[in-house]
Image (cartoon, rainbow, N blue to C red; front, side, top):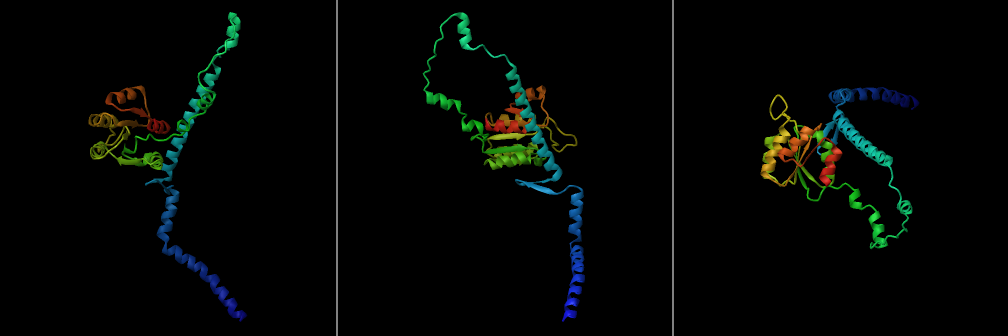
Length: 251
């Protein structure tokens, strides 16, 4: 019996490597693809309805973090600037210098009203998308560039339809009911060279079709010339900041 048991253990010891080799052989293409994917950092991450490569995911995440850092730095500079401004002389000192008797100022506002006013309104603290915006048409020749933002809008109950060029966007707008249009500025538009006026051209067309719909141009970089151009074609605003775009949608 001991001999048989030893024989079985020996066979099992030999079989396991064979089984593993067999599995690797059967699924060799899948394993090879996984290894190649890892080498090229081609693992995909699903954000909403879009699949991003690790590079795309890292870039969008990095861009949003940089933007938030920039906004925090700007806010900090404003606070520091405010703190260095000379404070106005207290009212008591001014009255003492003028020789006038201090007069207690009566307030018609009840104490509880002043207390309530000093507390921040919960609605002003949270960044909720405007109730008037329920359907957005987002135009970009590479919609995956906006996966994070689109997913955050979905999360807040906003429906987002995407179009990859001006022609498709105009057709969608004609047959849809959109409260807002967001467009990049540069697109291929079926040409070899990017048309960096595409967003402005679309804004002009949409504005002729609808005088009230919000139109935001969301692009990589914004200068004063582009701001003037956006205003000229009837765009509501132009921005390169994801956090500012969300704020505009919440105003």
